Image (cartoon, rainbow, N blue to C red; front, side, top):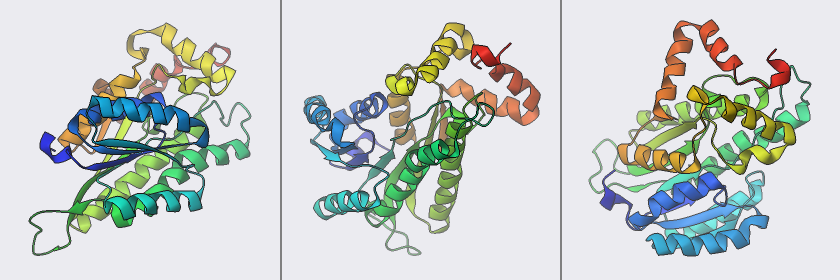
Length: 289
């Protein structure tokens, strides 16, 4: 997308109060967009301050809105409110999510798996479906085969864990794999319908954020990961925000952050055993003896 395309366009983002959500918005704000920042009720005061920050950075406007991605009725209410005011949602960023070490071999409960799936996957499904009537705006010169052609972007924040497995995180990996599968099908559907709605999936490596503070053992896992360094070096929320902006500008389909992590996908395609040996080093100490 050319820089001038963004001015006055509408972005709706979930998990906007988090470090990654904030970093994403900061990279788009100088383009003069209108932001609808959604998050849980407990984050509204933070979003009020963040809205002012984004406007100082160049956003045309920024409004915080309460929305729980597990609440179907609330999602519908918020999306319809935005849709009636703006008519269109140009960029929808599905960012909300959480993780922990719920897994099969460590005795994780099915209830926790269901809870995580409800937020990380069903939440993105619910919001995408609710936003469809408003997603994208008519192109200036539509083709004869689709006079109602629309243009916009649907962005999913998945994870490198959605591409390759991570020790002790079966539940989290499953939710992120599900996002990649859903995004692939939506992307294909838009192509068949000759729409210009770009479906972009971002797959970040572990990042230095508060995301890991869900549980004590989850934080311990990340501390262990960071100490290893080298190819296991953690990225930052800003790295992810910058990657989302570049992917949007370049109309990419799916990117790993950092980009060289895409090599793991290639390595896995030729040797699952080698990939497993590389990832074994990220396992918690008690499982890595």
